[in-house]
Image (cartoon, rainbow, N blue to C red):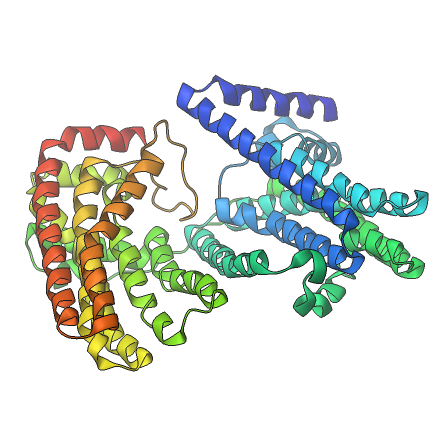
Length: 523
């Protein structure tokens, strides 16, 4: 059975290279990226051999713990179908224990599995000083690989069964994605630290606790052996091996349950009245606006935007704090950043409709009405955000003279972003996650649009905001009438971009209706 499933796994990997040339190119690029990551990790671990043992232990335990947590969280974030899901084998009557063993072994035959095995075994080079420490390092590496593989398999199966409803998927996906974004400042802070000499000194107490848990025991045992703590090394190895054995037992019990567990069905709620459609009136633009507002409230893809936009400025502030930017200046950063990403977030709004866009096309609605209706929820959020955030930013800066500049820069970048997005979403849609999918699941694309379009839209939005931002900066340095000019120029350019985007995007929408329908059917 193990050999049969392994052959199936290899066949699936081989079939991945029989797709379109662009998809094969993407797979090759991903493979090259994986090789690069592996080489860097192996080089770093080999370099830690000559580092301070305590600092090396800190880094290895922290990195290993993140790998284990990643094995738990990544299946929740990706939300993609698993070709090796035990439920796919349910019709064939395979004995569950044999299937569990085969699937666990097959999990190693993948790019992440190979990278994990290579990196884990490289820790032997980091810690081997004599035969005893080498043996401890080998046992720890094997236990770490088994632990990560089983955690990933268990997480994947539980996600496919328990998170089969849309609400469960969106809740876990948003939570996991938010955690991932919040980890970025930690990574930036680590990049600024003198890791080879100091390790993770501020977190040393926490890492000492992790060393005795299933998350870090396998990674910490060799360090204890090198330090001469034989009892500590033995205890950590026992924790690591026992954890791997317990996970194996859970996996063996989980497979037969998954083979017979039905998908969970989401419950519904009775709705009365027309909801937002009754509030916006009986006009084409009002109908589109009502539908867009409903999407922003109920669709997890738009909810993710609302959750992440307030977090993104925090990610940007961390490196600025590290390089000692004045705190008063930092008070001016969050609002323009949030306005920028809020306006830019709808640059692929048409693709998010998926096949529902046919209703907009076949109804004969004017393109301008479609474009206007779609921007209502963005402006309903963005305008109050700027109106409230600008005075608060000026208060944090400590000088009311920056208020016009804050309104000009933030309001201008919001309007410009929405205008450009209105045009680009009609002219250059690219595949997006479908309604009900995880907001962090990006479908494969056969062209470069999935990376080029958002990049161009973002850069164009920033370029349109530069004149107002420059005038605002001159106001900070020289005072005078610069803040007022920043307000006028920012809102003026933003308004022109908004009107141009709505009119131009509307005309493109009317002209490319059949192409948009064909795109929705393909993706």
